[in-house]
Length: 267
Image (cartoon, rainbow, N blue to C red; front, top):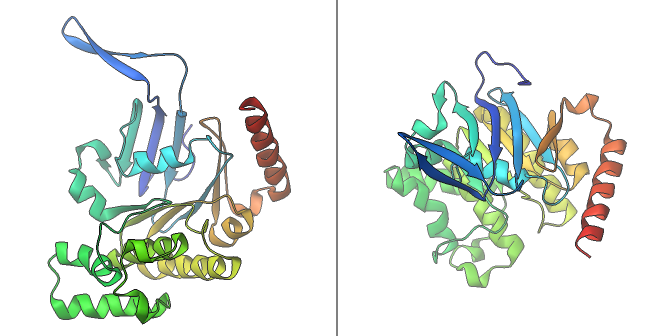
């Protein structure tokens, strides 16, 4: 069953599964997929997301949260099922074109050896914006995100993990993507900085009509950010609810129990 509104969906996921141990072999004139074991990181996940939706993706470690983001950005391809951006099958959109519209910020994003200033300008240079337009947009986001001027000539090695995370998020917002995917964007930030980021993301989605999906284990911040919650557990989409209908206390208990069980299983 696909949750959400099918008509006019910005993102549509239909019965998507992912198994990293899948192999393919030729059988007659076709190709058959053979799964080795039951190592599915996602299993039969379906949903539809409207333009401008803000979705918090929650679950214990290994639930499939980051896998889902990677599928939506085509860093990996689904074992089965289909993903659509608007009315286009994701696999039929050229990767470069797709990633100009669907931007993924990983938990430990790299700055590719550039200074912070170069990192922020680079995506706009690739889009061949004029120098003044680049300076204007980059300057706007430097101001909005309170990026100190003494960061601008620093390289990745001269930044802390939290600072690198902040710059990577700024780079994504400067692009002004159609869909923004964030993997634990507040993990290396203190609570005050995390709350400021959440406020900025809400404003970004509202002002630009962007669709934002955020993986976050900090449920207080997730609740502030979203108006919809995906709860993943062992690769299954257990709940897809408006945040007003989510029982946050039960969710906390469920995640704690799942994490405790995982730790016990791994010794």
